[in-house]
Image (cartoon, rainbow, N blue to C red; front, side):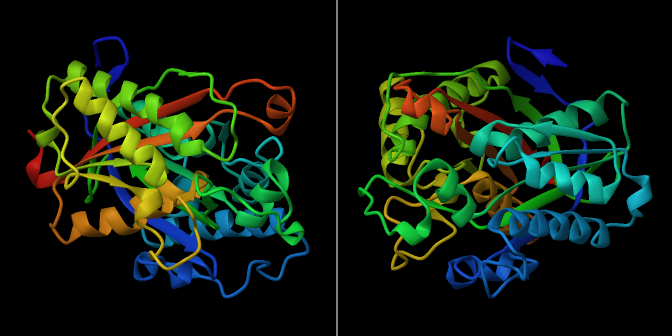
Length: 338
């Protein structure tokens, strides 16, 4: 199953049998609003705090994923998920509501594919039949913790990005109908010495390049093997850097088959500066928009490379650089797997 140093090949090809995606009012005005299962018209979701609103969205995403499947909640063996907030408390409280054995993860905005890779690994090895995998974020909660409360109205530079308010969940199974998880390449921490917390795309780009290069090498495939290579939330800045670095390494990736979730979710006239970010960014865009395209047979093979900046408010305050990571998962339609 292990090929090379960092890539798992899943011989049993676990299946994504259903998904659940939830978004907020800003996401409802974006490019892919029709790909959400549920959209809310206010940021509070009738809760007393933004953190509780985020928890509610994650609970809703899990409930929708189960409802859209052919199983009952009691058949789920594990819940593998995470977020950005205060020791991942929104996810942990969701796990309490679910009452399912739980692995809590933190890989920042790369959490969605870390959880999906681990779910596939466990199921491929016979460790479970059904696993819920997901990630969530909330714009106001994340801004309050990592930058400034939105009420402060602080001005941001053009390199800054807009945290997605949403939650995305995939129900992974041993068998069934749906897209297949065929491989995963686990990222390593890459630190290029950047210290600007308002330039996440620039900080994360080298990690994305490292994982993409390693994945293609260890799977012995060309970028053209995939209909799309999709990064998590590099935004305009990180995407351009990534394409440039890949081309310098003689990896023939084209702009047409290289997409970024952070540039997919919102319209160009929405005030998101360099694009979207957040743990929910890749989760809702992949589990909603891109998997819907696979269901419509407009895509057959995609490589999702979720990117994450592993800093904290404290590490930034203490002047540490921003370590980054990227986890890649390949998803292929059942009829097109070689």
